[in-house]
Image 1 (cartoon, rainbow, N blue to C red):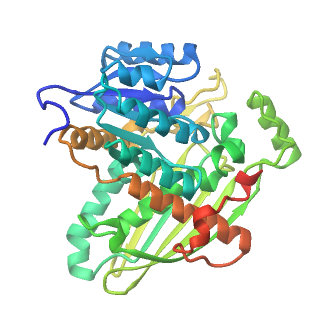
Image 2 (cartoon, one colour):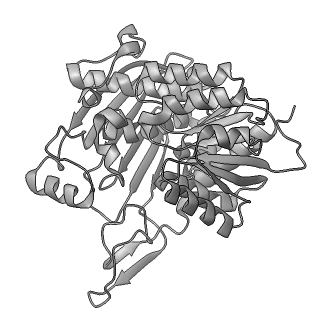
Length: 412
């Protein structure tokens, strides 16, 4: 049964109006059957600007609301996209659950940007609140919907696997020069550092590529994980001072979240064959900008994609000067020389296909491909990686100690 009448669009409200919310907003220019009708965030100027931007793009008659309750109770939204900071997530889900029970509410679904929560205990509570409220739920993991990942996986599993056998090794790396907002650097607010922020991408895209099309993610069993974290750049005095100048309100003399993380996941497929996901993430990368490198390997084949190896490049001489920006690539580090240009970041990184999928599954009243259950599994794996880094041991992701574990950076 459809969630809404299929003769009308899904009406969406945004919770959050920061960087990632604007990335999602841009992607909706390529999504049918959806309208952005509301936004709420703590800062009036930012939510008003977001609503004005949504209206300027023709994405709906978007209004700014002071809080979640007023947004939901107004009866205009069918679904919410949760895109606010990690430390506000539990309060957000509690507010959504309360508002969903109001007689004026039309809310039927919620989607949440990665990571679902800062700890496994918080992830379980977020899932419980959402399911108790009777809402459909989708976990927003854009890299699974990247155009290169979806096309590459389809070809590998459709052409190579029948002839040579299933893939056994997935590698994923995501690196850039550091986050946009000061709260990312506070391990207590964010839940950790780069491991929490970006390893959630890498472990899930690796599992996705190794999973047969149409098979559930738990068709692969994670046997063990081992991880490391490091502080390669931003604890150095010069870099710390530069970061303080860049980030208003950041005190780099306090414990800083890690800027490098590595993870190794060992898995078994249905036949008991060993599989591996190898992942690295960094906030200490200096290059053109955000770099994604994804590989998949099997008995007689290999696939590789790098986001900065684009077909479009631009050269600007030293005589071409201007203000810093991110008009060529996300997390751009230079404005001169030869630069790669990512022509459609929202599409290439996966946001457009991700939001198309969420909209259509919600409209038809069915659960998406990625749900909060998957988000909870990812948090479990990230906690196991943090505990491995702390103890210097290999960790069983089924270890009950993970249920109450808090990573060292999140302990302050």
